[in-house]
Image 1 (cartoon, one colour):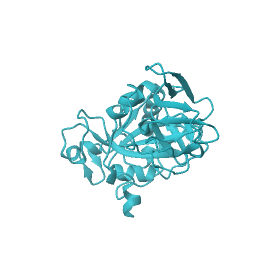
Image 2 (image 1 turned 90 degrees about the vertical axis):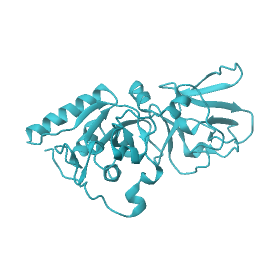
Image 3 (image 1 turned 60 degrees about the vertical axis):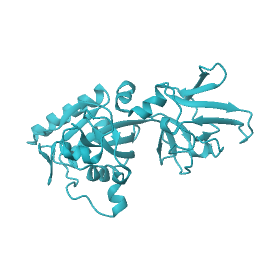
Image 4 (image 1 turned 90 degrees about the horizontal axis):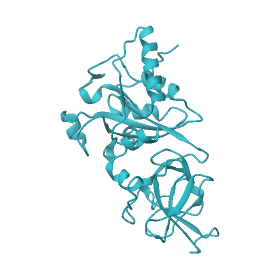
Length: 287
């Protein structure tokens, strides 16, 4: 999944995890952040740090005094002096590690870029997978995915198009090729690809080809973006099963492309507004 995940990352994340860049101090999402949970590798989803090991060092980047065992590796930095830290699985650049500063009894400070991390409010998860779906207005798709046990994080955005850094207005106007999409991070020990995709097909009308419910337009069509061949084959299999049940899905199965996060006011929209989805409901389709 790693190679495909790199294809889904926006350029500002790739500048850090792939090109070993550093975000500006005090600018990162997780610098001044204290929620309880686990920090994952943004590129491959491996659990890296628990919130119990995070502390405020004042350096301008998230600081941790201990990693999840076996999840982080060290190597001499290109400057020949500092010790660089990387994800042990995909070797995404995380930041640097320092010792002897006396901040905590462990006497260690993992100085990590927020852009190298995903946070989920779960204290025990060890590994995750990721999927991207489009099935109409992303507000409703996200709201229902949040209710599925095993889903750890959702994010709405735009995917499948050709324009970099698209805005909501541009996507709605058409011509960018993007779909309103939802990125779903899930616990791979609790939720399978098949169960996740079955749920997706059961929260929208995949046979509708011109949009979803009252929302019509290319940005509202049904798509599964696959990260690896396993996800691709599961999607194809489920579409064939639906056809046997008389449901002829128009859902496209496409390789992941850059997922551009939508504007903040779109994230968790229904939770923020107290409204309810108007064109997405759960309806069991599979036997």
